[in-house]
Length: 624
Image 1 (cartoon, rainbow, N blue to C red):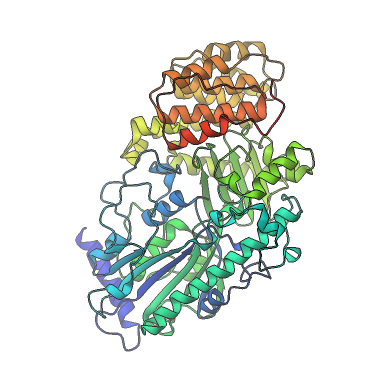
Image 2 (cartoon, helix red, strand yellow):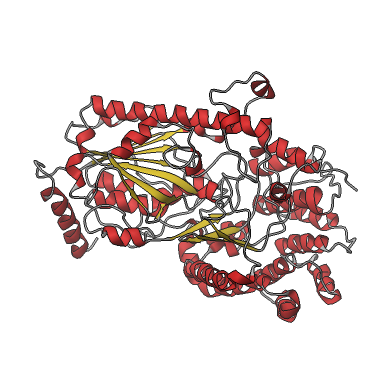
């Protein structure tokens, strides 16, 4: 740390201290984070849902701030939490996959932010979920189910306490059908308002009512922590942040880049003596966009510590923060890659009221199987209704190919069911959002333009260095991927050229472009047939997927995919191949796949989940 940084740190701390009435020479605020698992803004009375009463959270809001536009950068816990703790965007550091198959390492000299608090004399505690995708280091003085500020060495020691409240976690909705039959729910299912993409039936209404039950229980847990702080006489010098760790967990929320997966509640309780120094008026609602990468830098700033330059976030509170500038922030990036065994590759960009989603494997439906997700009755009920042809257009979309890109104007379309990407009236906005996302992904650079297996083999643990070295190539891969946004007849020759590239990842992305085409010409098909025998296993897998999307093509993908499964020594390659098999079996071809006689040597827990599913009859029948 250089002398200038130290001087700025000291001035920041001094400015905070001098502005606080009756503050001691070294008084610093205690800071508490309360994270409720799997909560978006859509199901709290403070934001939208009138029957979801959260009096404890609302009481905090009356004594502080409500942020109306707070966003997780990822819609799943390990990626979201690592983003929170590191202050950096996951795709540039290689920790964007849930669950991790290998640990990433933070950029050189960067630590998870509580480590800086600990070094500065804060007592740091975590109760108790971690779920990091990066090497942790010495972050916590205590991290367990008993961790508490009450164990700090002296009453004058400032503390940072992080506590996860799991009451709303998706597992809370893994209930048996008998709960519905016996009406085991506190809130009235008749009073809920199902989303337009959900079936409006008994199962979905009960599930939503049960979820609101859990939210109200979660609120009581928040109130319990606040009461303990009050009992200890700490509320006058403790800032309390309440927020959801990402959205969820009704179907099509957790795990997806829709607002229900990313847009989270954020309330900050600010004690009276800290309001003037922090330019806070109790009860205010703020509209500036807050991203998870901003919250760690905010805590460091509140503690009078410098924010490392390698962090992507910027403080939203504290000395030196311009409230007007924070209110002007209106952009957030979202990323979704692999969740458990299910793989996809999607990015989103929200700018003000406009939302842009780019699906890089659009043929994969949102509803592709994930064993854990389908433990929820609402998921399996939804799939059954689809198979039986009992859904409308908005409800069917979950099980059908996604658009290559989607554009939504959220005031008119809060649930993102009306895609404006094909509207001539919105062509200028579409092009603007498309360019902005492309520029952002190139600037990271986004490592997901290499498959996870390649990131594990070549980029980890120090993926940020790898990304810097490969930034030029990543930019070229993004340009190839974006050929899918153009009419196939206009880019056919360019795609064919890339299909013959000596670079396997250029071939890989050119194949993925063809998978977005509704039909292929004979020359492209012939080249894909050749690539089904490529030296790169994942080029072969993508060629198999693309060839099977051509309705007139009776080519059998099974020999290609079986060979990859039996010859690769990479569990990640096996996982991506099984992902393709699930897609082909359930959605694209309805072919039957018999894996029982295969010798698959590269197996991990995620691979085992797919094998369990594939050893059962497909819920999508008939097979041929």
